[in-house]
Length: 444
Image (cartoon, rainbow, N blue to C red):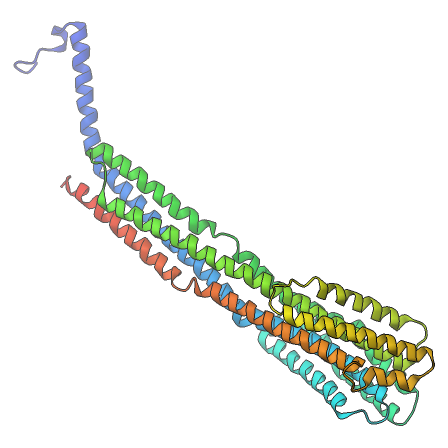
């Protein structure tokens, strides 16, 4: 029985019946939509809250990880690399000083002896530093162990050579050559490998740091897109153009994204400066110091062995050619460039002294050649080598300070970003809740 005043469908014309059915279906869909709106609104709110919180957590984690890596570079990796560089250099200095002392004959001058003793002592101290800072589980422990085992053997050979030299025994030169061969073929290659590994750790951290933290950038953008979509949905459903809470949440995420991009860019730029003005020139200057000592060793061994084969001259020429190229290619505006200019002048004086030494040897004037090689004059080989090495050491100090300053700047820029990202993300989540709450209350 149909309700009073409402005709039955079979009493209507086909067209009127179809229209009545459509009206009933539309009313049913509308009631279903209204009943489902709170659930949809809650789902939208949970999605926005989750995206805001996840964006904050991911950003804070990424920033903390990067800052920790920079702090570790500053507190451990860079000091380890500097220690390895000092070990490498000290061993080279010791080998060159041993030859210089031997040329003096009998009791060598005290400054020359002190230089050798200081270099050996510094090498031993750096071995201890390397062992204590990295531990036995370090993959380079075999290198440290190899150098530590060979160092007393080398020192013993040098002392035997000196003892025989004081007694006037020619065999002393053979012992010194054996010691230098041990240094050049075993100890220095291991020290070089150790130094390269330590420097590679710095470069790897710098390379990783200049890459953008994509997750920390993309997630806030996704959250912003979701907020924009939610505002469009609310505008259609409630016919309001703007939702103050969602609008403020969007502004908060925009601030977070801008902070990430700006702070990350500044930190990356500081890292690049640390690499280009610190790590790279430090490696060049370290290599230059090693080449100086290798050339000096070849020069002194030629006198010790009174070699006429030309092998030591070939080593000296090749080594100084590499040294000249390194110093000539050093950037003019880089830290330590003034010291490199001083080093070039000292290298020119040394080459001139070396040529005069060879000319004296060609005349059979061995005492004169020895005087040129180890004499106290400012234009003699010994003084030139000392000035060259001192200039390079000063340059290394400047590049190291530049590296550490830039790494410190890169880390400090990120100091408050990690907690700030969490605070801003939670603030955005709170603003989302504040923006949706009035709409939810409409269904109570």
